Image 1 (tube, one colour):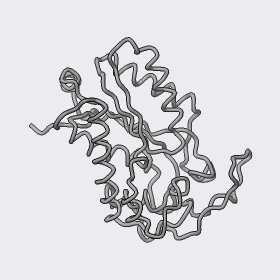
Image 2 (cartoon, one colour):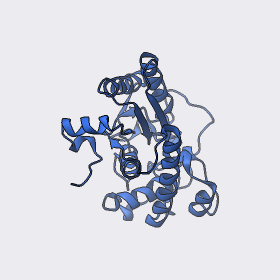
Image 3 (tube, helix red, strand yellow):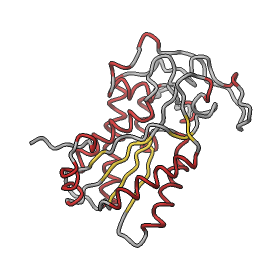
Amino acid sequence: MTKRFLMAEMTSPEFAERIKAGDLVIIPTGTTEQHGPHLPLGVDFMLPQAMALDIASQVGGVVTPPVNFGYKSMPRSGGGPFFPGTIGVDGATLSHLIRDVIRELARHGVRKICILDGNYENLWFLNEGVDLAYRELAESDIKIMVLQHWEFIADETFSSVFPDGFPGIELEHAAVLETSLMMHYYPDLVREDKIPDNPPAVSGPYDVWPPHKEWVPQSGALISAKGASAEKGRLIANQVGNDIVGAIKREFGIRGT
């Protein structure tokens, strides 16, 4: 029988067996927001889910359904609320959701959890949710890891993907990194004829309310995505995936596959 990795495709008894075996549980998180005229609204949770499946196949893990709503998109890093389809939640909502999911997994016996995030703005609210849950569960032997996949991109990979220099992660919204990874994992969902080639967004080194619409290019991409390719996506996915697997194995003491 083929081993399943998606929790949503398992029966309750099958999931119970995986818990009993001590499998790692990976929670993909992201949000639903605009990613220019060429990428779907689900990029930020679709990429972590795809990467989580790759990782789970190497560490024997289980991938939960993705958390597909995240903290509010900001103009300087995600385009903000100016585009239809961008749906953000309050930070406390995200923190409490993550807290509750961890508590439920722990109640069923899960002791190894990894949150793999794909939305730049989520991090501190995810950390807060984990901390709230961990305070309640600290007397157990649970261990929880939180990471954002782009933090694992090596200098050599950056040099290959950005031969003219990396513009910075805040500008990489709907640009080369995400477009290349989507070309690798979901090529049918990339509208290649609509890939934007606009100059970098220009904004102040601060946030302000009401937000400045003029800080966000009309395309919704914060910088040109024209340099994207499936080959670059494979390079990023392979290098980042391998390094995340290594970090997970070290932190959770997982040997083999």
